[in-house]
Image 1 (cartoon, rainbow, N blue to C red):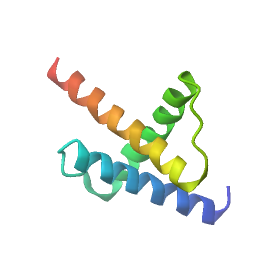
Image 2: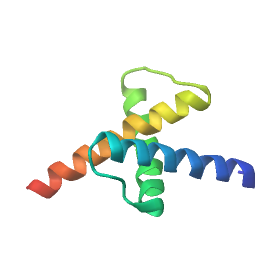
Image 3: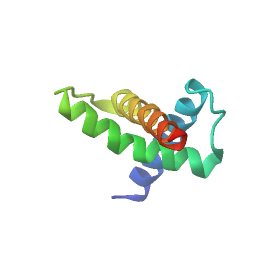
Image 4: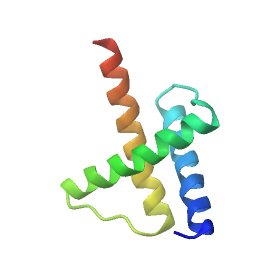
Length: 83
């Protein structure tokens, strides 16, 4: 992975985590928290999309996949906290 790819990966993670925090009415988790939520969300989103046979390519597809995964991650974490 080149430095440029790493920067894009972190930037997409930040945007996806930030958007998910806004959509889920969490207000975000700070820069580092949003990046972590976005990165874990991208992995979760890729796994979920793979289960359903959905492929999303390109920059917007990657962002959408990470966003969906981040929303799912926030939802799961909030449910686990309630238990």
